[in-house]
Length: 251
Ligand SMILES: [Zn+2]
Image 1 (cartoon, protein in one colour):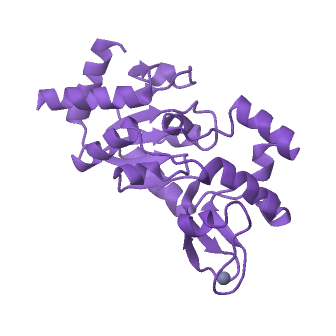
Image 2 (cartoon, protein in one colour; image 1 turned 90 degrees about the horizontal axis):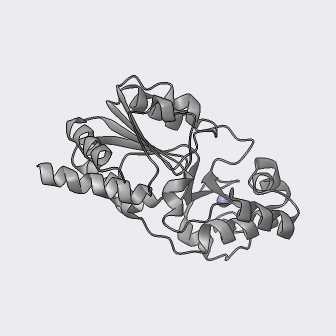
Image 3 (spheres, rainbow, N blue to C red; image 1 turned 30 degrees about the vertical axis):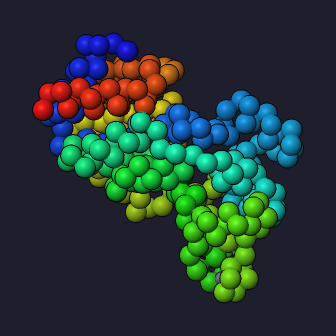
């Protein structure tokens, strides 16, 4: 990690009052969350189910092949025990200190809230909440885990339970999008982490940022590297926790 850059990052954080963190899958892979978009995930899925993860996680597939959907969904999103990593923990701490306004995430694992973050804009929804397709009753992730990959049914009406996850073919939640745009448009520092910035709506959202400094933390190059004041190619957990430590030394 570049020592000058990480000190500069800590200085930026020290001045920020409305920073926003925009994060993608790379934030969660450091917690051991399986990335179904990775080559391995894709290969295994196509071999096992005969279709791509994007097809399984689509609105039409959910209703046409609910049993296959849940078999895949349980394996990829519910079977492993995952915990917040140092990136999630540092971000929660920055919010507590009045530096970070919100986390805007493409992830659906609920790990930011598990680490203590309160204002989390979950663009693609969350695996932590569910509802009955027929009567609308809400269910927790623990209710659905009990089905162990079988189709979970509503205890009130017997209807099929659906995750509050934005599936392919479904629109993003309008309120969540509005909140994310407002946060980014009024942010004084934008930290982008663990995303290639190529998946919709990531690229579009960043256009709303009007502040001076973008800090980019990603292993691979992104189309936004040239727009960033600082670029880190290190692990996001290490960058965020080191910046937080340097911030403490300053105070
Ligand atoms: Zn119901």
